[in-house]
Length: 82
Image 1 (tube, rainbow, N blue to C red):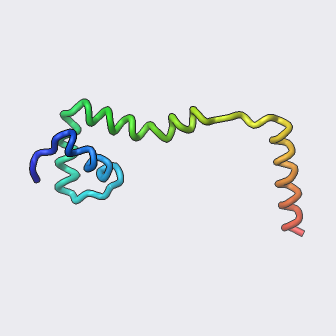
Image 2 (image 1 turned 90 degrees about the horizontal axis):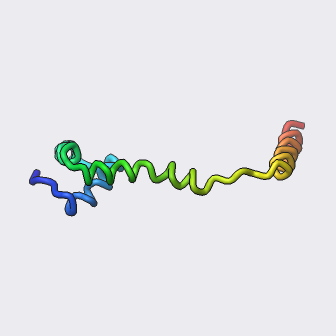
Image 3 (image 1 turned 180 degrees about the vertical axis):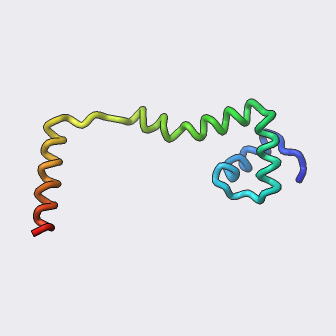
């Protein structure tokens, strides 16, 4: 396996994160990332993206809507129980 460099390794980083690399390629990526702040930061930000999106789009449900939804779900559950 030839040396990994950042720009040619970006596609490999995605495959690395998906667990789709052969063991020797995975080892080469891990060796590169261990010594490359840029790639380490890329992986950290990629792994944090779902949490950031969840936090940015989180909304509180209005209390009256929550109560109405819970009541509807309870009614639906009782219909299926009977």
